[in-house]
Length: 349
Image (cartoon, rainbow, N blue to C red; front, side, top):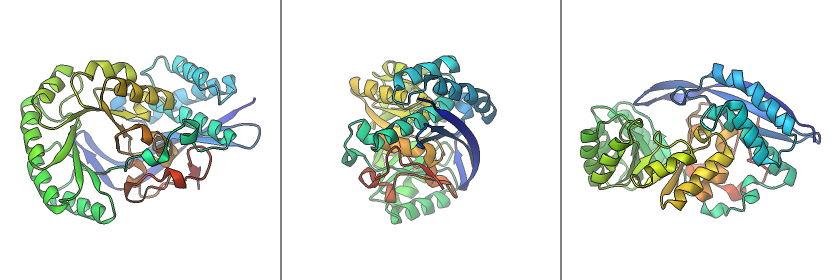
């Protein structure tokens, strides 16, 4: 069949500056990809570039035309295996241009499910009732601002919260937020900001405050550091930046308890699904994560949520206004069964 492809960019201000240990973001630049068949159906996908993973808007602009041309040359959205192989070849390897490939992959999968007339989770044979609720992230700010944000989110129905840490106030933040939301499930993310000694000390503090687990406590470039923390930690440790694709899972499988999988860092829906299954085969739990990104990509993640124990798909909730509608997520509850549109449910307003 003949496929036509286009893409455009949307600059989406966040509802508040979002800070992690590596810096602050106020605007999310999102590429929105469209893949159309000859029968009037359109697949929508998206992604935002992340410099930490080597991508910028410029690099995505450079490669997207070639990725989309590869999809047109395949000509069949149902041949996901061939599409993925061609995207990988054009990008230069399984770790290259992951967000750009992810945007195209999502659009192709959305179109394929629409052609079948089913939501994406049904195409995968998944149970919508198995999707865990998504946490909502509280970015770095003053201790009082983080406390107020946590209280507001808990009041709005979010009972799973993620705290970004990585400052000299980490103990104060955790104790203050825990006192303010005593019934919430908390986990924390240092984004690699701690050294080993500080991380080990912090895990004891986190355990005392009933924190469920800690994400990426130490830098990702030395797996031995992560192993030292995990060996001493009284709470589970999750690998995010230390584990990008399925091939990385064996390197951390004997070290951590949880692997964070993201469609945008894995390079697409099929690579993300492989990473999930690889982690499960190694006896690890999985958290499905995201970037600060639009429903053009978050909606697809919602359909993979039933495969995971933990979910962090709040990216579109951090935006002041998302021009793309997605899967209903009141209070973090991913209501796949209410997603009555075929495909991912993403729809550009």
